Image 1: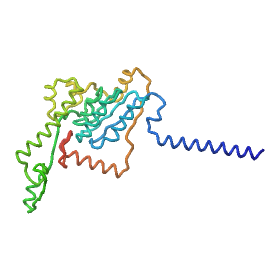
Image 2 (image 1 turned 90 degrees about the horizontal axis):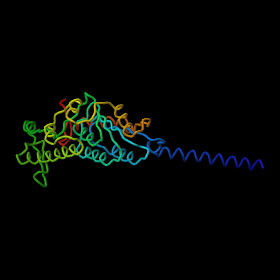
Image 3 (image 1 turned 180 degrees about the horizontal axis):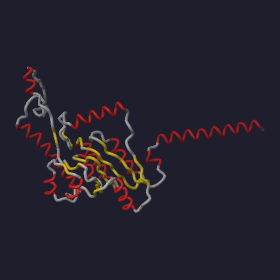
Length: 288
C-alpha cells in the first residue's frame, strides 16, 4: 500500500512539474501585451532616424488587435528619415481602430512630424523642434578631385538616367529636372497626408512647408499640433477620452540591442542623416 502511495505521489509531482514547465514556455513565448490582465494604455516609442520600422509597425498592429489595449501613446524623438518607412508608419496609425496620441519630445521634424500627423492628437513641448516639412536629397560630387589626380570614372548603363545622380560628373539640365520632379512628387505626398489629418488651409500649409522648423509653441499657433504638454498630459487626456481614470499605463519599448549592433545602428543613422548616400528623405538635417 505504501508503495502505491509513493508511486501516486511521484506521479502527482511529475504532473505538477510538467505543468510548471509548460507554463514557463508559454509565458516566454508570449508577447508583453498577451500577458495583460487589465485594460491598459500602451506606450511605444519612435527614436532616431526612421529607416527600419518593422518592429514598430508590427507592435502597433498587435496592440490594435489586443482587446485589453484601449489606446496608444506614441513617443517621438526623430528628425525623420527614409520615405517608405515613414509612410508605412503613417498608414499603420491611420488603420488603427483605437485612439493614438503623439507626444513629440526634443525633435519630431520632417518624417517625425509626418508620423505624428497620423495620430488623433499631437502633444509637444514649447521647445520641441518640429516642422521641416519637405524633401531633401544630397550627394557629393568628386569630379574636381578626380580631375586633379587623373582619375576617370567608367560607367556602363542600360538607360541614360541609370546613374543619376552621379558623384563623378555634373548633372545635365534634363537630369536636374528629372530629380526635381521626383522630389516634387514626394513633397506633394507629404502635403496630401498632412492635409488629411490637420485642419489647415492648403495655401497656408504650403507657406509653412518650405523646410523651415518651428518650436512647439509656434507649431501650436499654426495648428500643426494640438496641445503643449508632456506624456503625462497626453495620458490624462486619453484617460478622459476613454472615461477610464484608473486605467493602467504600460510601456512596450523595442528590446535593447547588443552594444555592437547599437553602435552600428547609430553609425548608420548618422551617415544617413548627413545624406551622403544620395537617397531621398523626409529628413531634418541641420548643419554639423
